[in-house]
Length: 236
Image (cartoon, rainbow, N blue to C red; front, side):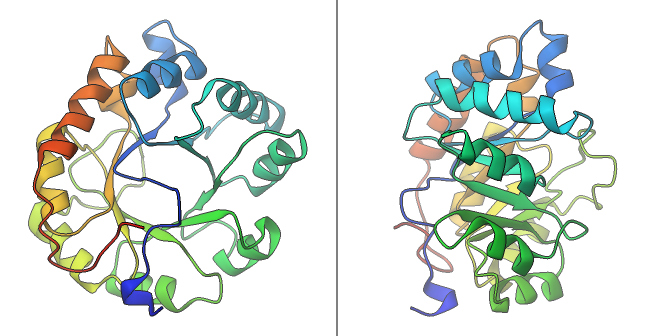
């Protein structure tokens, strides 16, 4: 199977991909695990636990709490911290994989640590980074491309791409792609039409008064939009 026809990692659905923000959850009076539970009930298909300021012990506790309540159909990804992923797996938690950025551990090193069966996602924002991801010995499973729109959840987010800029990068990518950065339900038909594997959502769910209803609005937007396979098949 060539890179250009490589599907999303078997059994992993990235179409409605929640990325957690503990501060936004807390502002609504909820823990990350409580927010995830409601979002899962609303249909999110994957969850990435992102804890930029937590200690390793606190991060692990959150991952274990989420793993304990997450339905098996929903992938559980750990952001950046390979040590937390490995510790959670050692505790017997069902963790699916790791997502890293360009300034984190090299993807090839991450793959050696997490093994061949774990999912590996990588942030990429330029044609060069997309090509490097596709040709890396790390066997990256998918890439996150952003920012789609202006976002306040990531201080170092690049300039927003908009739908046209995102579509241009998707067309260059040899791996399944996920959009991130200010993604709202109305974006999902556009993302699916250009062949993206899904959209990653932070504020749209974490800051919502009702995470279950918010998640449902995203899942319905994705499932009701036609899949115009402009680039490659990203389904297993």
